[in-house]
Length: 261
Image 1 (cartoon, helix red, strand yellow):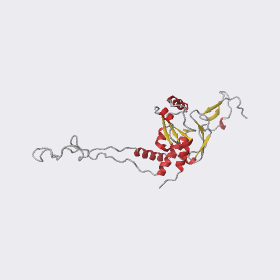
Image 2 (cartoon, rainbow, N blue to C red):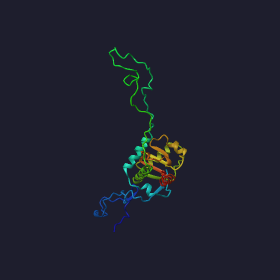
Image 3 (cartoon, rainbow, N blue to C red):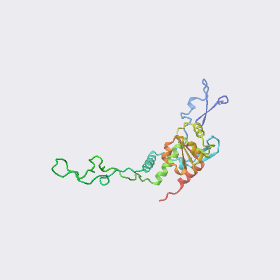
Image 4 (cartoon, helix red, strand yellow):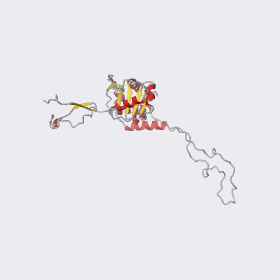
């Protein structure tokens, strides 16, 4: 039997362990596991429902919430994420680039000089592409850069992005995103309390609170989105994802809605 009464407790990354005195061996080394304490025992991507702690900006305990396994615990596929991000970036291109053809360039249509007798190359216009200020041949014209991607692939990409943040422990569930005032220093203080956080994406279920919007508009590392605007590229750009209960419920409802064909 081993006695642990006199050992101080120690917590690391949400896991409880014990500090061992320097000159005392409590457990024989052959009985110790080679696994690190923060490695989960379960395999990822098993479509299992997960239980997440619900809190708020003040780190108050607000209970627990069940995360649907078919949304927050799907297998990670980088190829699907790549296809969705490529589709997003292509679709958002404006495509307003435009160059002038020989019929659109400003200039005279008169023949610059006679056809023969000058010893020079023959020309019929000064608006050709070989002249300064002339036309551009085969240049870009306004067009759409969008590519087609099936709805089920887009939906799967969002599930994979959410599952990846959940597996990394970077998905935080908040009761709400209410802040006492519009002061930016409050948000800065809240973000500093989060462990290993560089860029945060806040997702709310409905309209964004006006005070929260004012408090975060000067912070380049904090962005806000409604649940309807949550997308794969925005999730990948932020290392920490904070979602409210309402946002998670709406996302799950959106993922379970049949696809219109």
